[in-house]
Length: 112
Length: 113
Image 1 (cartoon, each protein chain N blue to C red):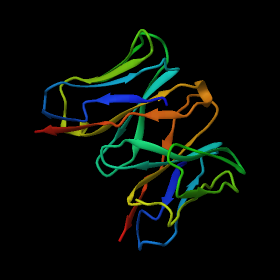
Image 2: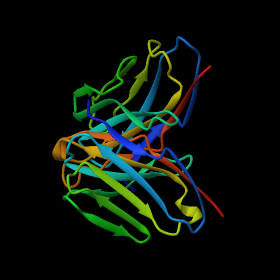
Image 3: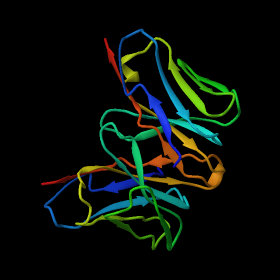
Image 4: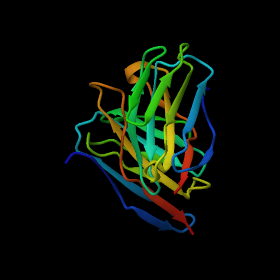
């Protein structure tokens, strides 16, 4: 079936270092979303990418969608302790009515 | 404030018992979802419902049942047939207008003793 692979599973960084998580699908996606789950919390929507090659920024976070719409990345510049949590990508194969397929997530820890 | 309410937050059960997790939303969303989260496994879809009185199996429906008698409510029953029910259960909803974005509840953590 359809699968979204996400790496790395864990990432430990020193505060101020950059962080990147990657998602890859074997088939073309309609769009991809990113969610953040704080420790003990629930996933919260961050952003949706729809267009081929799209790049979006939210302060220190940069989201990219590949030209072939099969891969995506989330990059955090100069991590802060507030960035701690698990970041999930979620691929959509079926347009506005499609179900999301979640990656397994990347758990980020930030050492002050 | 609009949102999704899940209850209970923590639940303990003995083996062989059925338990029902509640999910209520006041977002006027049409679609509702149940996910299971295990460490390192991401979110796996159990059941979903796009309209009242209709629901579909997700990837891991075995040992679970749902109902959708009201638009606002989508309870999940974890039956004794579920072999490994200890997990964190997340309910989510989505409106059909606008972006295909999920809003999640705070989750219910089930532990089987």
